[in-house]
Length: 113
Image (tube, rainbow, N blue to C red; front, top):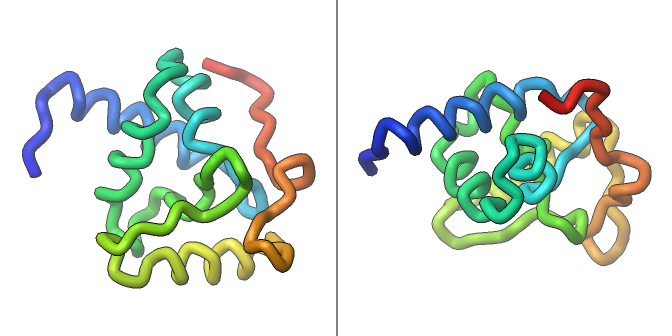
């Protein structure tokens, strides 16, 4: 899949910000979009993170949907399960409805830009 220069730059901004999310914390797709000044681009955040290799230095697993859940998709070929495993290894607990408590685990960066 080819990206335009503008899209590639935006993806690099996404990856740079996601790298700042500390272990044991998560952000939502919408939160990342908001922090980057693109509040209506949560879906694009998801597309960018989908492109990341599972063993990348980008902690893609730390971004979840607004309900505090992993967004499942058949195209991931099993990485949905990997995302949960990686988050649980960081100490994040999911409830019986497969949700994590965003009040507890949501990343609150000190500096927005």
